Image (cartoon, rainbow, N blue to C red):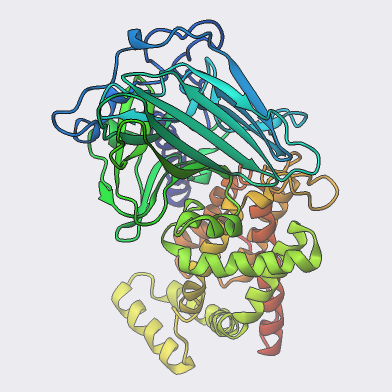
Amino acid sequence: MNDIRRTILWVIFGFSLVLLWDQWQLHNGRQATFFPTPAKPAATAPAATGTAASGAASTPAPSSLPATAAAPAGSAQVPADSARVPVARERVTVTTDVLRLTFDSEGGSLVRSEFLKHVDMDDKNRPFVLLEESPDRVYLAQTGLIGGNFPTHKTAMTFSGDKTLPDGANQLVARFESADIGGVKLVKTYTVKRGDYAIAVRHEVINSGTAAVTPQLYLQLLRDGSKPKGESAFYMTFTGPAVYTDAAKFQKVEFSDIDKGKASFQKTASDGYVAMVQHYFASAWLLPQGMAREFFMRKVDNNLYSVGVITPLKPVAPGASVSADVTLFVGPQEEKRLEALAPGLDLIKDYGWLTMLAKPLYWLLDQLHKVLANWGWSIVALVLLLKIAFYWLNAKAYASMAKMKAINPRIMEMRERLKDNPQQMQQEMMRIYREEKVNPMGGCFPILIQIPVFIALYWVLLSSVEMRNAPWILWIKDLSTPDPYFILPVVMTLTTLLQTALNPAPPDPLQAKLMWFMPLIFSVMFFFFPAGLVLYWITNNILSIAQQWVINTRMGVPPQFNLPKFN
């Protein structure tokens, strides 16, 4: 009866953890995992047509940048919205083979990016949208000048250039030019290459006034603080701003830390980048190495955050001009492409503290895919290679388990005989272990050594955009989403229970029951996991069962199923 009560208490405890997890998600501004409520929309964006919208709820003026980085001491502040030149506001869309970009003539800002090679998960007839300005989402790339009465991302501009990548051409050019403001004109030129997600952006400052000016260029990414739509809390992926420098390396900052004024990152450097990161996709401003820069992050509005960089430009004499070339990356987190763009940019594909293990595992997975041309079979092959690499460690673990299983009847008989004398029971148990040369922890240590490798592989599969919309076989059309029929999670649960049945039952009855409850509780999560991750676990389980079966048979310990007893 006491055992049944303990079992019921464990079930209640597990359900309580589920409820606590849901409340923790809500506390941190995320959607609940098990009992979700409708998500609140982000702040409403300004109208897309007509004259420039008043206010700055979704597109803050540069004067809202951090006070320490807004402008040099004694310089003029950013002009008010009333200083705009009254030009009709329009949206300009340009298209290449992989990108469809929409710019706003107000400031020449990038307000929408569609990836023509990646489909939307809710409607696979539409391309995936990252940057967007709508009533539900705000995610923009903006630039401008500070340090005087200069053009900003709120300044009206006129467009010229290409709207479609011409046949046979390798690039298109979109140009936005402001009118004179305080004797200064800003020209932004976006160059987008065929097959590329990196956009070259040239800022040309033309001084048509009578006095020299010393402007500063700011580059910022503005985003609402909501997780991507449909993102499961089980994935534990990061959404938010990040800063990279050679000295401090990759520094992620939670939106909640910005809310509390606890954002910690390197503020100044002569290298590095700023980025907005989410699952599979990212945007980043990249400056040339050696160019001085000051990083900033701040909360702009109720649910809007900006991350950016400010860099000083050379003094511009009357009648002269100066230009600054930077790169805006807006695209999928394809590791090799990121590595080629800038030092440390590949770290936005975040493997956490296991990066040193995860990167070679991704490389090996990519090599297998080049041969097999199917990401599902590549996962199976990679797990098989890992099991071969760890064969002797696993052999020692299963050999130790087989010895434990062989002496288990003696242990159980002794426990029953000495159940009223715990001290003597413990002494007798240690004597049996010594006589039989059995280490009760011998089956654990070899497995513990492998855990970091398999956790790293978990992050590789979870983070790789290549899994998105990648089919395996039959009903598995997308390895990045849960199995629609829950067949893989059920198989995963059955193989986990089979593994448990093959392991020697612990002498303690309560531990024996927990050995069966824990796999069941753990398996619940796999109903929410991407199919690629579940396939990886199933493959690992099946290979482990086969190896355990062979080793037990060789040691003369026939495989035996230790079924649970709940009476």
